[in-house]
Image: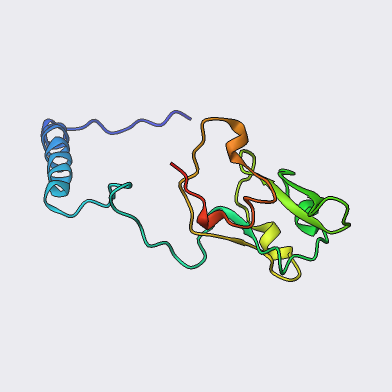
Length: 146
């Protein structure tokens, strides 16, 4: 069955055509007078919540080299490599190009040796700059990303 919509009167049509743009105008101009939600990033910084998922860092003293972080990573961006040449101990290396910061590695780490930092500015000129080897992965907060 075909539904027939009632015809709009001239008054209803004018109401839509005049009130619609007026409502839009006042909605837009309202934001001219209130504080903007954006922050000028390099000059000002945001205070992140406690559970913010930033760049991963590993505490090499707590890490037992079990490799669970590498096994649970859905993007396989964590690789276990020997900590020092000639020794059996392993430590994770992280490829930040593929990390989606899901936090599974943090949740599954038995000694809580891997954790998220509040570092957000990750830039590099080459792909190798986004690969955290065993030297970088233990001191992410000390690195300067510019």
